[in-house]
Image (tube, rainbow, N blue to C red; front, side, top):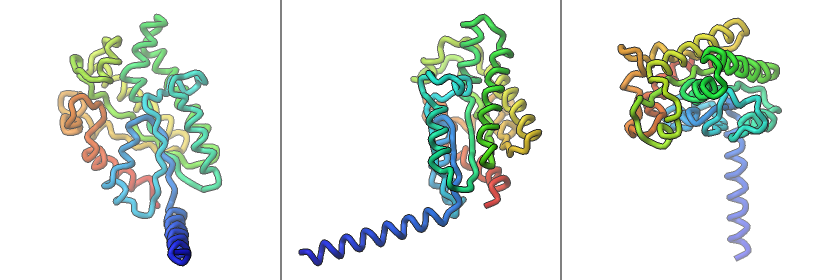
Length: 243
């Protein structure tokens, strides 16, 4: 009996060492963002980068507008900063993707609530995002992925669609704001030596809205189709990761 337990313990220890060796031998890429970054957990994406370990820290509902607010509901800034500290010992790349909740809801909501222009609220969000990226860039190589285009149509139903009913901006208006936001961030990144993956051109349909091919099979799910999103991302990631 004792011998059997000893064999099991040694086997477990050996497998643990082998697992840690595999992980530690890989390139670590930290992924920070809202629920859209869960695409990095897709098996097809992982298989495209066999020597890479994507460490994903996703905060559902995280906003750029709330990054500077320590009392924000999601507390995303603290989550992201803790993730950055945890892996501080590694020379790594950091992928950041945020903004869908901002351009699809928060910017419009705050403009109406505080009687400000949409452009003023947009510029505040852009400023917050720039500051966040600068803070990461001090120690790490940063890769920013463009904010996904909005998929919630004007009369859609579903949990997220219902939560955003207070905003009356049309899908076309929200799409235009998202592409404007992405253009501003792309310009900033290019000026400051930060890699920017722009997917807008590949994501827009002929009607100026998100391509129907990217829509999730579940009409109540506002995320892109995972398989189609991976297909868009992998070639672009190959260009910038260079692992």
